[in-house]
Image (cartoon, rainbow, N blue to C red):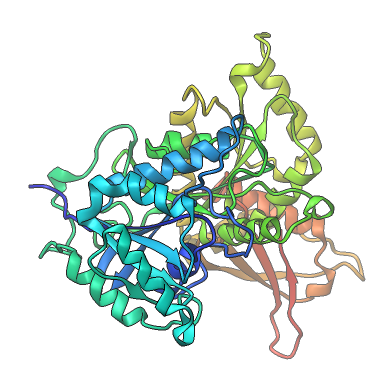
Length: 476
């Protein structure tokens, strides 16, 4: 029995005809970055959507450019990925701008002519009837009909959705989980194909966010994991702008991957597009369970890497420090241990975070990385029973009692775990103001060592044992 077929709808057209605006409109969210600058979208962005109440896989593509610089490999990759998406599509929503027919439009139509049976022609930016009369001239390109819309203002979007749904074939089993024999069971295999964005019922994917400075190999790793070319890879820093999603299965666990834009220091962000890209990357931390912080092994850990890791830690996300491009490092004995020791020395407050050396390009080390992610997710979802926790707390207090000075004295009454993923414990004490950071570190380390939270951030909150005391919050 085959996996359920969810139709693939691809938005295509030249730059700046409103593809990303329509993508966001159909998703009812600001998923893709929109800007008047042509060519903002580079990577195809895929998301699950409901069109006229039916599930589809919706893809926003980069613009088809006629004037491509001879040496601009990035432009050629954007066009190549756009064409590949149209070939895979069940339906192509081909977009034009009202009253404008350019050589790029004409060349793209000619290129897509063999696929004309699955093209739905749409004219955007016709709010209030703007330039509709001129737009009907587009019928000369061979289309049977045109749908006039305004993606920005929402004009005739319902009509467009109905036309899309009418042109698609939907599986009667939409929404059902695939049978066990159809689920991927290999070491890791891409799930960007049929059903990739709709995991089986009851199964929650492990969300991975790939973060780091520009040009550290995030897109290369994303493509390696998902067995796809969803993210465009280029040596030019800042290639990825939107968050590119994919999915795969490793050891019967489904993973969701968020490939993000490179995060630079604020002082170096000099355009609106990059500002929104960085904001989307930071937002991806909140959607993730685990952050893979990619670091160029040749450059080592930077202050910016520390800030990214601290952000993930504050949100209670698991963090793996990924030393990528290890294949480019000199073949020196014990080089890996030396680099890891240097990172531990300069980043002691995250001593618990695993460090993995790999080559995203060659695939070496990727399986080890995923094994760590599986174990880390178990820790993130672990819950310690209150009785077990307080039995352990009694031992910890006996081993290292709280200070007993006149100003530093306090007693710990009991503790509870109040949340998982992020993991958080609350300790009730007699004098919260007297609890030192050193004693909190002691308790946190004991929790990690004795209760099985050795690879993840652990938040501690101190509350007074009497109700009339004000709360004091301590986190790390």
